[in-house]
Length: 359
Image 1 (tube, one colour):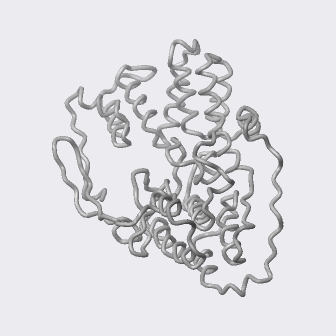
Image 2 (cartoon, helix red, strand yellow):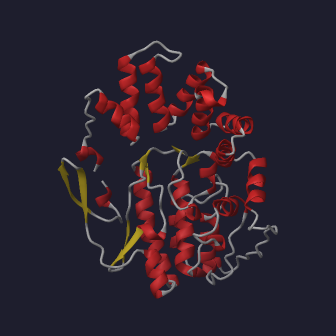
Image 3 (tube, one colour):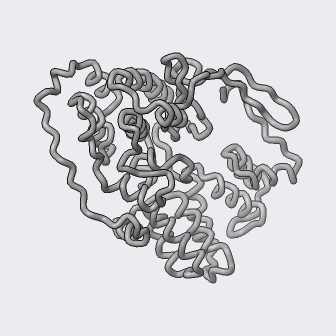
């Protein structure tokens, strides 16, 4: 499938008792992160060429209902002037992907991730962040990999990108539209392709005001998190709940998970279910636990699906049902949850995958 676009080419797979090994084409040049660190930022013309090639990859994603979910310079390989999108390990099928795990680099993640979902528009945002890095040699919002998660989330949600170092009005306009915080106002793929065709002179009269961001102490992670919690951002509500769990502040954790769960955030739904299920929290209510497990499972959350299997296997709240238990263990295992896979092995059930269709 991915061989049809600007992507590293799949050659073959080798299947043995240890698993499946995938063989891909060799790209002799560096990934773009290392390329910029070694050779410096790319030129404006190279930036337009990069954008044009990557739009083909995004167009393929949109037409085939698949999202890459980890688009960043380190996952784009350069080979004789061709930009190839690599590392499709996080890719998921669907027009709208529910947020569950933070696996990608937060510097390149679109703001809507923290509200519970991503779409092709989120890929456009990540592409904009990548293009900014290639043209300036700096991460968006002056972030660094060593910076805290709190800072990265805060800048993604509230800080406007400073495009003053981009001298081309056309490129500045394209970036400003790709980096819109509100995905409903962000430029679409079709619009982006049309704007890319226009001449530089068409953008001469555009004026870009100076970016005004509120002063904030980025060293104070607690203050940053508290601001985001006040705005009921589901991802951070869940993270704050997990922090309270570590500190054994279970009532405070419950309040965070409850808010996040009711906002439709799958991870918070699972954590709320576990608070109703695990004895040490002293909130046992298997009916409510099952309710929230179902909600989280609807969002294809592998861990929630595993616990659905446990409930049917043990007869917690529902009647014991071996077939339903296996159904949920299989769904969980296919979403790569190891404990579910081990459960199937306990029952001598092999999970078969159609590798040809996957590739």
